[in-house]
Length: 353
Image (cartoon, rainbow, N blue to C red; front, side, top):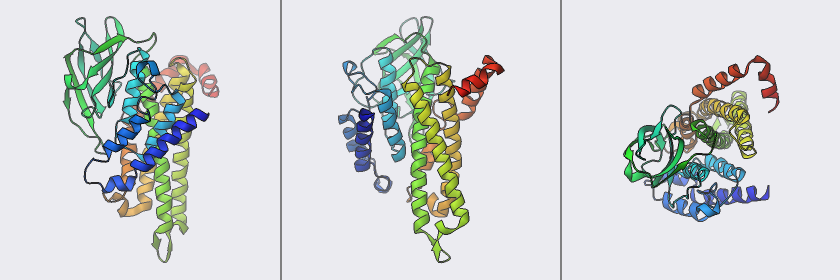
């Protein structure tokens, strides 16, 4: 699709110019984030999934997913994916998206935020990416009136700073009778599982992108590093490892792309979306673990140093496994769905994909 290619090319160009891994890794501060975020915002990428009438750029789901793939390949530590998800969530309830960085809550299937009878929000959400850096939070809340979607000012919440494995913000947000800026009912059939599925696919695409970069970095290093008077890429053991890494990257990309395509072409978060999205998060998370181990084995000790860029990809891919449900949680939920449908429905469901 031509529009998808244009959006992806725009994202790639901006990230290549302003998010070079080695340049960022050498930076002693975060001043690189401001020009990067400004360029992304001017291109309309953070609000890709928000209709124009609600303040966004009105791109389709497929175009937005291509942006997430690019973001994964560069392993950027800015709230691009989070703002995209927040804007998408708000748009489900026709709430206009404000300017600036946003994040979404909850980011774990076990956390609950309640919409009380007095019109305020209460609850505690753990592992919220970039909550400290966000100006606003898009919230999915449940109450006696059903499921609601709300826009909240981040300053109105108590935010305890935390870090994930990659030392990126993963904060705890407490809603103590917080008054939302806007709140509307969620669409019929939309619930917290729907949000978790969308977030899971977003993280799966980012993990797949990071694995592609791990492979590129590892192949390049193996062709440069000399041991026993020949490039290590000539050793059979290294070739075998690189082939396994390529397999993990390809599997992750296939699973994530299939799930993204399913959501982009679906009108609801049905069983097909559940199967694709949960399977993608499971497979991509496994690939992150296996791929990171292989990449570091190829690099040896140098890959663990702070000066090398490899950790930018491996640590973020591993950290993204925990967001919007880790692979063990999704495996259990997928098993429950299959068991509920019965043995006779398993093969038709899998074959239909």
